[in-house]
Image 1 (cartoon, one colour):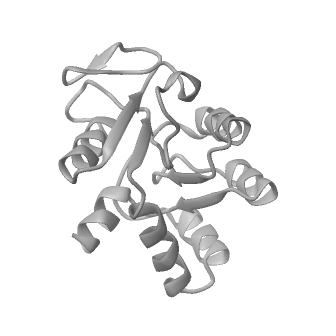
Image 2 (tube, helix red, strand yellow):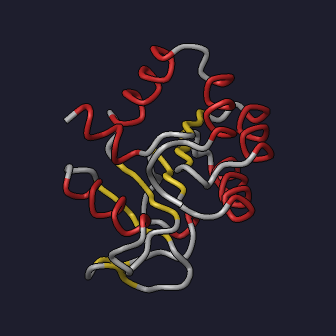
Length: 153
């Protein structure tokens, strides 16, 4: 789970969802203009993408909340067990967990009124993407937030 080339399946669904590159670019720019991010699947293990994404976004000046029910802190920062327990509402939820977990997280986002969802490569599934579309959630998938934010830096 994390970054790298999208899989053929995610690339085809990415192309279907974002009919033009400019539509995807506009969505990415909208997401990256936001200030507060939650990284669901943030990890204490430095080699994992959940850790890399958390650190990368913080280094770029974003306010970032790590979310992982299995840990209490990451790099000295408090880690939250769920989106509902964050001290403030994030503008963007970046999801770095397997598809079955991602589906639950996306449902939580809807229930909490969180509408910008970034599914890291390998976190998406057709069920998750269909749910996002049906519920009117803004969703980016098939591209890595670190790579996209580096392009704008």
